[in-house]
Image (cartoon, rainbow, N blue to C red; front, side):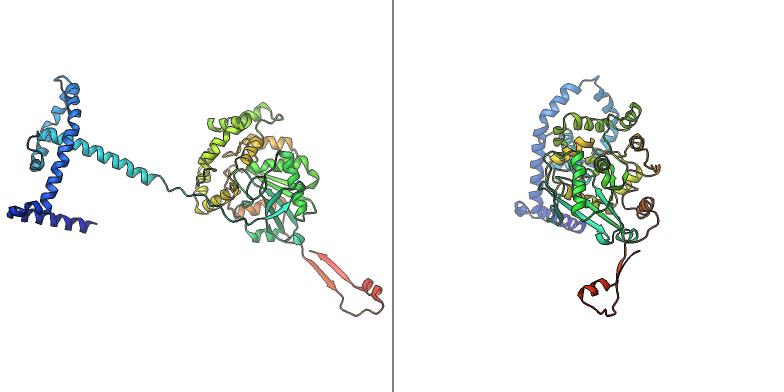
Length: 455
């Protein structure tokens, strides 16, 4: 670009010099055309600013005005600069005062550069918005007794080899794809775990529920477990607002559960069983905007559609802290800015809002307010008080995301805490005695030796 500009300048100078020596062709020279264009622009600028000049004279031109007193101090330096630039005056209209003309021109140039600067900064500071993608249907689905379908995802060992079955209901603005983010298949194999995740009603590829509540959520979980071959008791794992569905399972289907684990559990902050101290400890940690969103979720839930349509239902990607009004700590901030997390978050959100319907999100809001940046300690204390048999582990140096997301050592600690030493999947070996057996068919069947060993 620099070389092109210099070449053009050189051609302009040469053309101007040539035209000075050949007056007969001046109208055809490039330099002449440029000078005439500049003169026309300057004349238009002067005429445009005449009114502004008159206003300045009337309002600021008095002898005792602030402008007159301070401009006098700049007279000397201005005269030196003007003396060096005086040769530009030949391009001005002959009937115009150079001082007035140049003041107007400088004002127009400063204004133009200011506008261009603001536009350039705006273009550089605003990142390009990435549109949400709608992916092809890919989930396995099971039919519930009421005719609805639930989409699910299965990880880990097969059903007949699973030592433990874990069902993970996802949290707000998530889907079956989340599960335990970053969990390695080798760790599931090491502990013999079958991990099952499913889309809540209206999320992802699951059909909506006509009148969803916590009891229906627990019943859906029970039917889902039976439909995918979980005949024994299973574990339920709830993270953040997914803890509400684990809570519902403990209340409504305790006979189906082998146990429950909740991480940063979100519960109803209006629960009547809370003491005033617990409730105060929860509410004091939230910002005014967060409190306002909880108020809307409780009193005017339909008004939340406006906020949803402007954020995650807008068809464009955004930051989780902006969409959910979160104020994150340093460790959580570093995690969500990691490209691995960003890729996971975007795909999970795309699946969560696949149906583009605000109703399931409103239902979640009514059930639990909304997801929060860091669940206040008072909320965990309340869960521990209501469930005195539960073991509580406080992690003072962990954020809301850092212990649960993309942390291999954390995931190992979770399973070790729940299940102890890893024993691997169940190995079912069938040994058949190959020696021939004499007798009729019935005697042969009785004489066949089968040995099933469970390791």
